[in-house]
Length: 212
Image 1 (cartoon, rainbow, N blue to C red):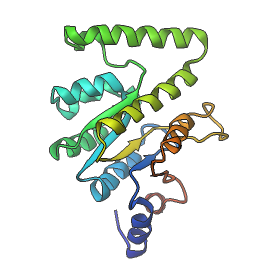
Image 2 (cartoon, rainbow, N blue to C red):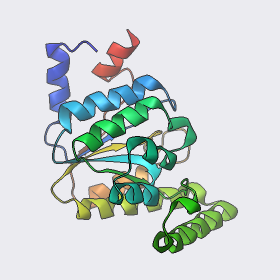
Image 3 (cartoon, rainbow, N blue to C red):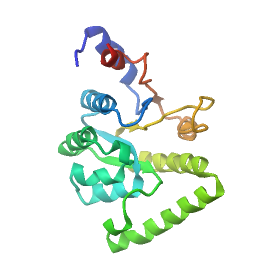
């Protein structure tokens, strides 16, 4: 992608001095969005950083602790995001020892993939997911649990900046799945942590280049 001086300066103002950067996308599984994420990661999160995905949280932690390959980690993602671009982004981060973790409580990785000591955790998560789904509180449960998991990661990695990539970031009051991810934003504000939410749309210089 062509980088202009003006775009580079705009990006630096947007990303500089923020511990958390939230990146969303307006449609799922599009190659250009994942390529954009990798470019942003390479420019601004190439050291002292953690990449956070909307992927199976326990599965991603298992992958991280067992040093799995990028391809092996793909099963932690929603099927629509299991693409060669996701593999490439993961491989880039793994090659630089950048942790790749998840905050999605929805169990996606099969139980049989886990070692015995991890299976009790997976059984409990599956039960929680089933209860929330049956009660009709899935979205609220998911948002609250994702917020808790993200806050826990901020404590586990207190010196790292975080690129948080959510496939449908919406703030409260916007149309869509209720107030999805607004719970995360609210809890971060309460802790006094700095963040920025670049819009992957017409306001984003990089996206403008993608659509020209």
